[in-house]
Length: 185
Image (cartoon, rainbow, N blue to C red; front, side):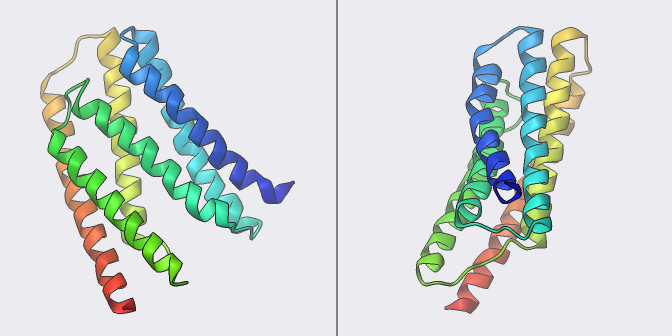
């Protein structure tokens, strides 16, 4: 049973994505914003624990290798898309940069996987993910706050600047992965 817990957490996170999507895109109430924030935070916590438990129980599965990063990407890109389109806190260019990097690295990983060459996540990819998740949680908390209380619109500029830094870090992480891929050729 212990061996299945990381994969169960990954599946749970995947199931939370459509719930988050409906709450963030289709509800306009303060309670909907609060629930979207809670669902995102729970999903982010499952990401942390599925990796921790997989390492602790020494259970790395093919399912987990594929679905864990996919679940992360879908969750993060859904939130970024909401902030770039529906909510308008960040530039759509930020979403495009991050989405392009995620798709490009995923394609390269798949290409090398077929050649039985596995590229593990490194510190740059983990830092990228951490800054994305922290920024998204803060932004969701702010979004929820704005549904209940008055706020300083200048905070939206700070959020946008933060995500430009995240986009830059995402680019650097992608360049790092491309250089690793080129060395493996």
